[in-house]
Length: 497
Image (cartoon, rainbow, N blue to C red; front, side):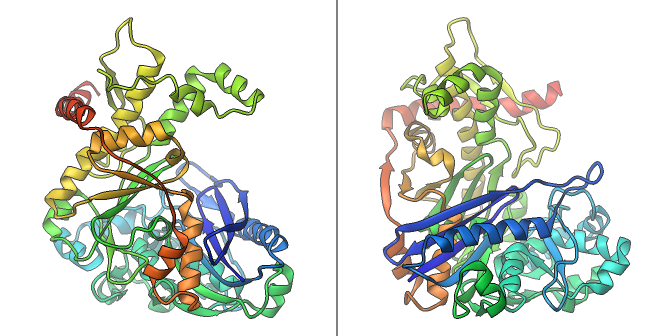
């Protein structure tokens, strides 16, 4: 028997089948593109995405006939919601969080007293959330609105299309702005304010709850048994935490992908005033009794990709010709010691605490002796300084981190993880499986189906450690000195632009 985890992201989906000892038996992924009907709009063709998910499921089940799937769970991006009919038909596209529609509703909610709204929802108001898009659809697509049975996020949408009940977990509900964090229910006050009928929204349950079984008609088409249990999943960052083994306060995921996101875990909701000052949200973890926040930057690994594409296209082509990873080639040029460069990594809009939509990057300290390896390392150091700054603000709100679990494509780089351990002066732990979103969903599938008695038992069985990167005391001291200077960059850059 095996467990299936599905992870639905902005531009692609991944499906894995996991043996009960943690071995990945099969994996498949598919890509799709964001649709932009006009400037400022951003959608996914939900029907196409569902076809791609089904294709990935069939590829995995074809390889696991000797270890058939017994339970399935889905993790997904947070804000995009798709309209569906009662008979499980997709009625239209989903609007992405970065779609500009819905700003009027965001403005109305922003007019509320911020501490009161944060106490209720755990969020600062913004138009990236899914609920503001739903109100836009109500006002601008009345025929679609009238036909819609429910608006579902991708984790609950896939579960519903497979045959489950239309239920979402608390973490995904939180991405709507309509959720009451403490009551773990839709907020009647907010729904009344914006005119959102509760019956257009899914039911609510803790992640890991069974919501049905795969429908017989679809089971045959996908190579699944109709006895397969459907377990409700979670926001991808929260599922990522499960897949990395982040299950108690003081631990955090350090996700190293195109974007970089740190997701700390804690057991009590911090004071609203401190969180608002740091411009941080609060969200339910996928595991009960825990909460998370998100510290992120849209640069992250994208900065290294920018360097590769802009300054090393020939090296990229040469590496591909001999089957090497160009990042391994480039990062091998980095010196062992900290550089004298200071990089403000605001090459794209930033996340908390600045939320700078018109960001500009800055590279300071270049000389004629600066090597390409130093330049590359300076970029990686700058991204880590950005997060150290945000982590210090988190600590002021009472959120402290003793151990980071590294996930994503960047976690494969020993050199990159060592830089982060030295700058943060904390150990970074790399699990054997660093693509943790689908793994976290598979773990929730096992917990929900009763294969494991608890989250602790499941994670002990399925999450294995590859290596721990301890900070070097001498390098950590040098980075302390450079970090003190890093604080000067953002005000200086603002004065220029």
